[in-house]
Length: 433
Image (cartoon, rainbow, N blue to C red; front, side, top):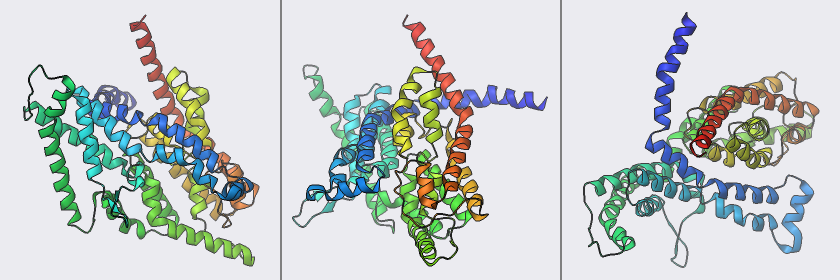
């Protein structure tokens, strides 16, 4: 009876609520706007794999051939795609949101893009030229891009609906008329962001992009390379990703010195022939927790590629599986998507937390060899990286075990998403038959 009540509550209350939430104009705009960045992310991922293919001889060749660093040269397209992620997202989100309000979408998107740029502190070189750090336009600035794309567009639309615009005669071409109509709402939107920026700059945070790091740096800095510390750090990484913030970058900025120091201690102990002192190191996360990238999405990517029944997921799987093998998961994070998707939050957090727990227990008890201080490239595919990081076959076996359990954690959620997507495709086909 209790089970029936719970099932009834879920079906009658929770499912309709979340379905309505997912269909809201803001989440639809967020989903469609983020999707605009997916093709460029996939293209950039391919060039990243070519540039950072994890073979020492290949990497040495890339660094020294013809007196040029070819790894950097080949990643030019990666920079041109990954580092525009936030810029594309803010434009796409604002465009789709304004369109849902039946307001000139292009003008609203331009205003929101300008507002996003306004949040970023510009640099000045010796010649006096202004420039914007590219990393502020990529996933590091994605959370700001989402907020600007949603809230500044809402503010812009509200001003338009209040008729706070310049109305041109009907004889004026629409492109010119729309440009003039956006002058007052666009100007007021930029003034609002400018005032917010001035307010933030007057605080110890210094700038809008620093807000997240400012509030997280001290709490994260108190964590050490222990199991509780590793679990908390990984939880924060995943939680930030759910909101579109590159969690690994934020947390690594604080925790990497601790993890690298632990790695160096293991390397020194290995060289001296002593027992390795640390379990939690940089390789602990790079090679045993983040298999497929943050969220441990390798198993999910393989299921999308080989077990999907819906055409959309099957196609997406073929595109994301390759990068996932090399631990690049931006295509799946923004393509599925995982960002702001309540239906995939639980496994996205649970899978890597399981990896932290299983890896720590296995290494601390001696069932699996500890990482020996070798800096294995983060793009090295699992199984290979496990062996290289530990110098022992047990490392590869542990990775395989973690991948299988990760896939099982994602299984129910993947099947539910695939089933619903299949229904959508069937309804679309029937409607257009």
